[in-house]
View 1 (tube, rainbow, N blue to C red):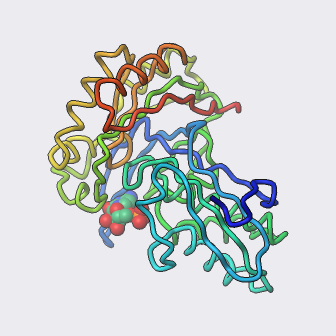
View 2 (cartoon, helix red, strand yellow):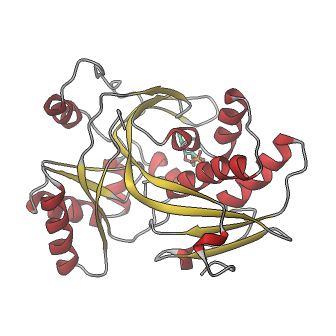
View 3 (tube, helix red, strand yellow):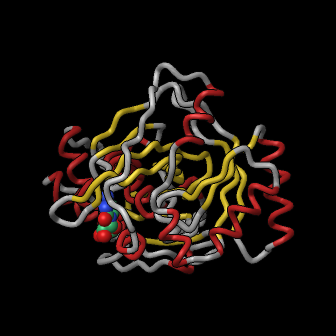
Length: 298
Ligand code: C5P
């Protein structure tokens, strides 16, 4: 529980929505080793939640299903790294702060939990400290924290290119009813990239602005996640979980990011919730969650 014991004691609250790679094409590699990606990304209603309050000293507390998997070490915790980098960047007195993280998303799972938390920390602390950074400075700071952090600052449907920093919003992407499924095996992103057989795959070809809701599903179906084959080698459960989603009525299933979370898109939230409940019954030790994604029009 938060130190104050009351949610009301926190003056600022930010949602850290899970990031879903509806498509991820690896199109090349930079000289520094980072891969060039074309990604169609959306965000779910479900996520972590960060709460902020002025405090005598800097304090960090945790709750939630996956709280036990994190530490308050400012060398590795992206929320604390974001706090320290933002404080340095604003260059003005930034008073001590209590940050509480409700960790609802599994970690190292391909749905950007850590990146979304870092982005929410930047957004929340700017509100609490009553300051903003110019857009470009904020984007650069976010990128320093991780390739996926700039898109998590947006937290709405977008296409990201480069290593994730070249962002184009997709206002016509519809909301989807979705089940997230994870065998609760953490995946190391660099390990997945290292196992990639080919690094110059065809680019993502989409025509935002021209696609209706039904066409989007077809267009996404025709795209890929190039990280799925190497991730399946590392975590064979991905193949099983994807088959389970399909068997429970998903219109489309795919892995997100570097895995191991897979998503299934369902026709309605009712069918998604029923499927999540049935899958949970089958494998109570895995993670299944029904959620709706954010539409581009919000
Ligand atoms: O930027 P982030 O810390 O999320 O990346 C983690 C690791 O994933 C990088 O160190 C790199 O090995 C790999 N990566 C990559 N190409 C990307 C993003 C990440 O090779 N576009």
